[in-house]
Length: 252
Image (cartoon, rainbow, N blue to C red; front, side, top):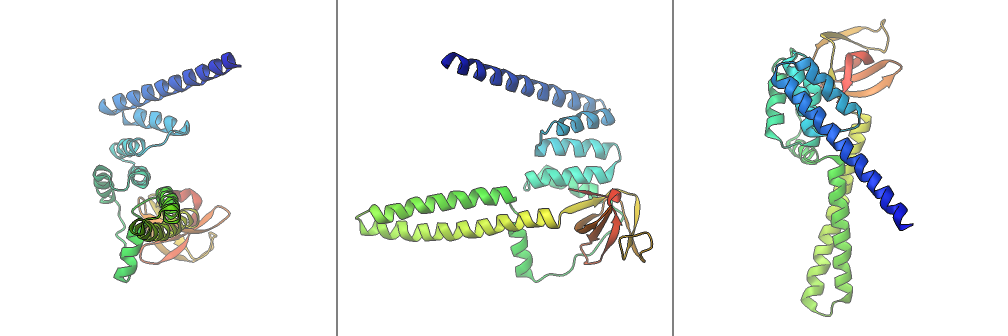
């Protein structure tokens, strides 16, 4: 039995090493293509890596750079946004995303929002749903451990400190959990997306017969708020909304 277990572990380890080696070879290949200005080849390799279920902020960032160099602005923005989701505070990602957005034709005003509400939204968006979830779990577990100290300790100061810190941590855990749920709900029900088509007519209904409301262009960031067949309802940052074809937009 022990010998069989050793063989299984060896096989798994070998497969992991081989997979990691192949991944590194592809990354090096894509980087070489990029440095030699063969951007389409670099894109092809990066997309293959993503198709193999590898994902990282660096990978999306590099793919965004390759798309940008190929003058495919909308797809560069999609990948910069995906990189930003995984690494929100990275300055290079933010800079390149801002640079790509200067090529977007539409300059949409944001609907004014009460400053406290705006601040609260930005605070929640500082971390991803998973990151808020990890914080919630960590705070809850530490809070329970401190409550255990409260019940077992005979020292008054220790009991007081452990009790109040535990209460603070458990309340923080509940807030973090709610932030995680909110981020998850937004991602599932109102995901951000980028317009891919050079120009798109937004209609009042999900059909070609719908009234033409306004025109939007490639690279614009929107929210997908509803779907019906191959149509998607999108909302702009100024509050205007309407229907476009699914092929005209790509969810981040």
